Length: 165
Ligand SMILES: NC(=O)c1ccc[n+]([C@@H]2O[C@H](COP(=O)([O-])OP(=O)(O)OC[C@H]3O[C@@H](n4cnc5c(N)ncnc54)[C@H](O)[C@@H]3O)[C@@H](O)[C@H]2O)c1
Ligand SMILES: CCCCC[C@H](O)CC\C=C/C=C/C=C/[C@@H](O)[C@@H](O)CCCC(=O)O
Image 1 (spheres, rainbow, N blue to C red):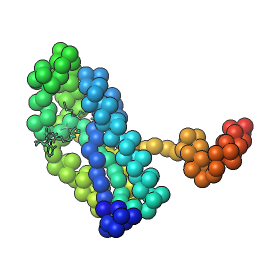
Image 2: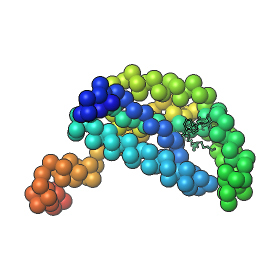
Image 3: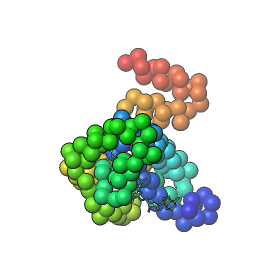
């Protein structure tokens, strides 16, 4: 797909979850995987931009969606020691509501059609619909930009200087 390898470019949509943004104590491994999807997507999107792959890489974080996966919490073999906590997940489903798969399809189409989206973390929830996580630029982002631009010594001086103000 990458133009760097003779491909025509395109868009990749990784599927995370709101659990990647709001830790689910009853599903720590699932939470870790979904956090990883977000971090990997944002890193690869930046790589693709810097290397001119011509590939937009985004992720979507749906809340609860009406699919068979929701029934997996009823099986102790899936939940392990957290099986005793399944009512807490059921309560979250009741509190947050359950989306229909069409809402996720709408999010997919938006990412495909909006060519400005790269490194975007789309949230899809019953209460707010489609919206995006806002990673406001801050000190760490500035440091990364300086470091990626200069050699280590020069970058270190600039960062040290900027911290004096
Ligand atoms: N349903 C939700 O509430 C929800 C919310 C947020 C994120 N997600 C994520 O969305 C993704 C899809 O979940 P879902 O709700 O559709 O789950 P699901 O279990 O209902 O459906 C998953 C489908 O993928 C198929 N599958 C499994 N392994 C496969 C493979 N190696 N190759 C091809 N197909 C394979 C299964 O047969 C199944 O039909 C998952 O990554 C899940 O974590 C789901
Ligand atoms: C049940 C097993 C499969 C897990 C399926 C999902 O991946 C788990 C989703 C986990 C948490 C969902 C949280 C949803 C929160 C939203 O509804 C939202 O209203 C909370 C406010 C945050 C926001 O919208 O920015």
